[in-house]
Every structure is written in structure tokens, then in C-alpha cells.
Image 1 (cartoon, rainbow, N blue to C red):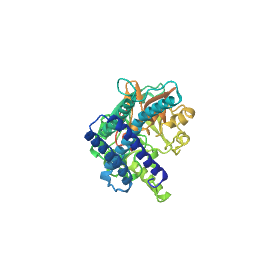
Image 2: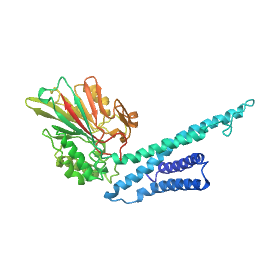
Image 3: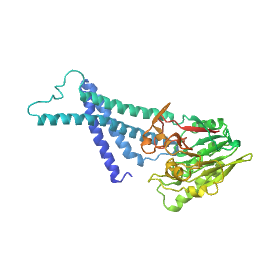
Image 4: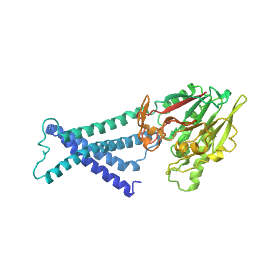
Length: 416
């Protein structure tokens, strides 16, 4: 991407943003001593120019696998600075509009002059106030992103009980651990991941279900973690599906054959871990004389930018006779896009994909994340008449190497 017109437009925009932000910095530091101003301005431009030069250089710097966190962290800091300045600049822009309107009124009002900035009376001027407010908000955003680096392995166990009238008696009390979005290619702390897997096993699940995105892009990313995730065991088995990242769609392959080989290796990884990968099919789970159906489909999304590999019709065929059905489907948009409309007897769908954007707020009775403006259902439990959807917030992380407000999740579902 670095040689595309978009890349150079982005860099140009960053330079203009730095210049625009600097104007506000001069306003808030106008009462500072000359020496202090010099220090503030020097530090600002060293950081700003350094961030741009590092962004230009990053694609050309070779990082070994052990240093991949450094690369991701550097990029995240640069991105954090950019968005912090962008958010702050919205405040500055509001003030520019206000001052522009004031100037325009002064020009067209011949009989009633409007007070200028210098003519404003007591208290802090609105320009300085908005400049400080913008910097406070932008600085707060950047600070939370840096703080979030330490949350990426803080695995949170969320327990939910689900009651169904049509659940066979033998399955009452069934404990399911649901995990999703491992993204092994992002991991840099194996001991922390081991602690996460140990936390899963402490739940003593009857059944473990994984809903896709084992890797970021390629099968080799699991190489160092095979001896970690093969510890996931349950009396009724471990079942899995594929997510959008498992297909290698975000890699520039030399040819289509290499991409197909990678996908086959991904499937082999699931098998080597002892997981039963469901590829548009279903299996029958038995307890005593009772049976339920577990369906698993490949990635299926109602969002145009993600392909539809899944075939629920194929997976569903033959499952009609079972009184209770669980569906594993990576993308939660599948629920409203197809499941609720055409498969109303699927009782529970499990999904992941969104990660809760790894950024948001969760309080008792309230949750918010920017991802909700793209996905109406994005984390936790949802209902549609008798059907339920549970979206796991993700075990791993991708892109931003941290989490703010939305912690990595281990879901424990108890059916009754």
C-alpha cells in the first residue's frame, strides 16, 4: 500500500493535521515563558516528524517473529497519536467555525460591531477553552490506548445460564465453554496464553466450541502454540469452525495454489489439536437416550466486504429431526442475515468476529463500542423470539495489541 496514491494522501493529511494541531498548541502555551515554549514546540515536532518518518520506514524494516510485538506496538502508538490529534482537532475546528461566523457577522453588520477575541470579557476565552478541551480529550484517548497494552491477556470468564423448554432432559446442566478469535499470529507472551488455556480448563466444561479465526493469516502462526491449545479437552469433545482470517484472504499469495495449500494446513492444525472442524455440516451429540444437533458453517457474513463461504442449508440437512440445535458461525451478522429468517428452529447461535473492537465501555446494564455502528449485535447475549445469539469478545487480539474496556473473553454457557 505504501506506493499507492492513498498512502501519500494519508501522509500529506498527517502533515497538515500536525500543522493545524500546532496552531492550537501555540494558543494554550501563549502565557508560558519563552524557554518553556521552545521546549514544548521542540518536543512536539520531534515526536510528530519522528512518527511520520517511522510510519514511512516501517514497511522496509525487517522484524523477526520475536520482535513482531515491537512493530505492532510502534504502529499502534503512531495510530494512537494520529487519532488523538484528529479528535482534538474537531474541537479546534468548532472554534474556527465560531470565530469565522463572528468575523462574517462583523463584516455584514455595519451598525453593530461584534466583540473580537481580544474584546471578550472576563474568564478564559472560548478559543483557549476549546483548545484545552480538545487536547484533554485527545490526550485521554491516547492515554487509554497505551494503558490498554496491558489488558490483552487479562482473560475474563463470563458465565451465562440459558433456559429452554425444548432442551432434552439429559442435556439439562450442560456446560459449554465458548471461545473465539484466538489470532495466534498476534501472541508474543506464551506463558500468558497458557494461563488463559488453564483458566478455560478450570471451568470443567462438558463441551468446548471455538468459532473461528485461529490465525491472522497463515497456518505457520500456530507453530509455537500447538502444545498450548492441544490441552483443550472436554468429555463431549472440542468442535471448531473457520473465521474470515483463516482463509488467507488478506495475504498477497504468489498463486492461488499456495492459498489453497495454506487452508489445507489450517484444517490439519485443527485435526492435530484434536478439534473436530465443522465445514458446513452437523454432528449429533448424545447423552443417554437424548440427542441434539451441533451445526458448524464456514464464514458467512451479510457485510459486503466479507465473502460467503458458509452453506447453512448443507449443514442443516438431516438436522431437522433433532429437538434442539446449536449453530457455530463466526460472523454475528449471519444471525439476522439468514438464521432468524429461514432457520427459526436453531435455538442457539455462537459467534465471534467483532472483538468488541477491543475498545469500549461495559458497565452493568450498559455497553458501548464503536463497532456497534457496524454490527448491531456485537458482544454478549441477544434474543429474537425464542432464538438466542451469543457473541464472544475474542480470546486474542489483532491490529491494536491491547484492549480498553472490552477484555478477552472465556464464555461459560450452562443450558437448562
